[in-house]
Length: 284
Image (cartoon, rainbow, N blue to C red):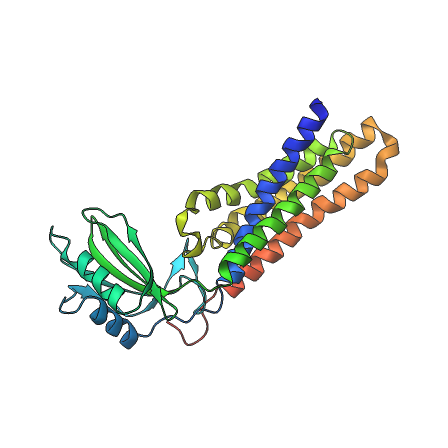
């Protein structure tokens, strides 16, 4: 019974680790292909939703970044325009936004809890508009809406990663000691920083804000860490295993190769993600 519980726990751990990696890849792939608004479009939308209101500060559509990683022009979350208003304490802009969005055909109108007043969020024509109240003031944000493929891609990536992680850790759990302890420890230590940070920034806005930049942002830390873990695995495991059971050299070779390939594959995946996240030429 204890062996089955241990194996189940390892499979769950693998599902969480690689499922999080799959989730990040799914949000990256599913968020590609959006078209950010141009400056004239953003000004027009702001005037339609809040007619007569004059923003105290506004900026051009900017292509942002997350965690120090610059997003490409067609990445979800890259292009947005912000308008700041002085609404006082009467929440007049909130009611005006709600009425304008309802009469002009904006869909999915939903309340956004705010600092002094509740704001609103709505979508139409591939754009998401949000009026939010914070300690800094009242902000109207206009940004691309999440593509329809984002949610299926995120769910599919999560399920595929979780299945792969459960299968990998389940297979490792059936090996003779110290294979499960060593392999699971190396994989867990190698992925835990990115997984922990991903779940820290993950929240209700998963379909609106990208979480995948966590991994390329951590690449300068994770790649050296994986190289160190690779050396530890290649050195420690064969030595320990051959001392305890000389007949298990086939398993030693298989697991050693897996330990060697995992950091290389993950490094290549992070490099591909990082290159794909760079802004296209010609964009500021």
